[in-house]
Length: 476
Ligand SMILES: Nc1ncnc2c1ncn2[C@@H]1O[C@H](COP(=O)(O)OP(=O)(O)O)[C@@H](O)[C@H]1O
Ligand SMILES: [Mg+2]
Image 1 (cartoon, rainbow, N blue to C red):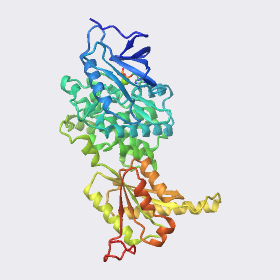
Image 2 (image 1 turned 90 degrees about the horizontal axis):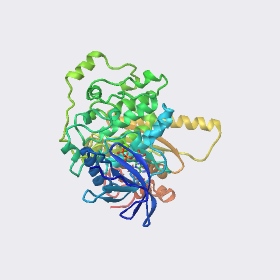
Image 3 (image 1 turned 45 degrees about the vertical axis):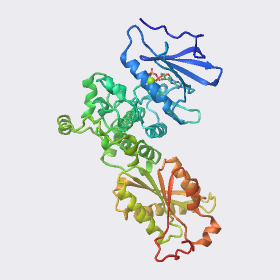
Image 4 (image 1 turned 135 degrees about the vertical axis):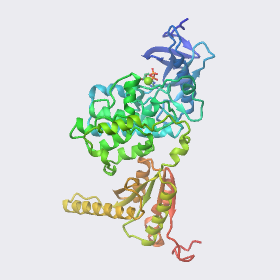
């Protein structure tokens, strides 16, 4: 028999049920209030209808397990739950004000800059989620909201996978779950533990938001959905001739069929969305046509993509693909120090081949200037620095796709490096210690400040000593 729906005015475990705000296929959501909880809240309850849908129940159980384990600004805060041993199972969570991203579908395509800004926020939120060992698996506009402060909030964990919990959706059902236009190829084949599936969905969203068209259409039949296993989407530049090549590079990189060909982490995707001038262009950037028939057929009949369940866990995968910032001082270049930095950077690049090195130099501004000639000079200096940095990085012997170069103009080098590290979600900073103790006392040590305040780990590199006591600092 159908369970009765909640009714406004009803009180459940102290929560006063107010109005219904959403009625979906598997769940309904209600505004609720509670004397002990002053913040705005929603109660999500499963919809049983006349015949209980097992998927709705299992999905609700999964969300009940996952949401309380999540923390941070990119998820709605969990407040309470009633489990399946009670007459009315529910989840109460923080209510995020405003609309979901679904509301913006009427405005598509969005200006590139706006779409990229939205994509960056979502990638940042996904990075946070993946680092909590969860793959969302249903990234789409109606599951994305934004806090008044701007951060993306990912809602709806009914289809999600948690690396440290039994995956009931996997164990109990043979059909893939997800939302047809956004589902990654491997997800269609049953893989549920690859964070790169969320990057594919974000690629679909970015493609859609910048072109107004869905890259793989809207087909919900299995055969229609499976076409994405071998058929590549129409390149965005074909649909909008002014489409920036770097943006096409990013979007098609997310939409690669093989997870291994996509960005290795949401963090690295966020880095590219936040640093368009440093996106490494490949053949993807310029493509104007879909792959030819021969390639499509080859992919169709030699598909190597298999449902793989024996992947490393999410945390160890992410540990292999960090973003490492190397702060290089070119002002009063100290050869021995830059050499030591090079040695250390090369050592890391070799030990962690998936790492991305961001080589950063702060071009110190002496004063604010509006003088045109000086601006021009400043511009030339900036360009010169970029070239110098590139040369420095090339000596590491890395592939072009493994490093980026950044010249930041700022008054305070330490603050500039700290700001770079936090806005780009840098995992580790390599920075040279300043040698000259006189300058250090006068100017303060940049490396000490970075080491003290960085949002990540820091290695302070010193020049290799020829003999103990020769580094001019008198330290052992
Ligand atoms: N924490 C929340 N804050 C505000 N609105 C929410 C929240 N959770 C869900 N919603 C709203 O309810 C809708 C449905 O919720 P969701 O959890 O996605 O359920 P469904 O499984 O039916 O898709 C969302 O699209 C959103 O509009
Ligand atoms: Mg939803």
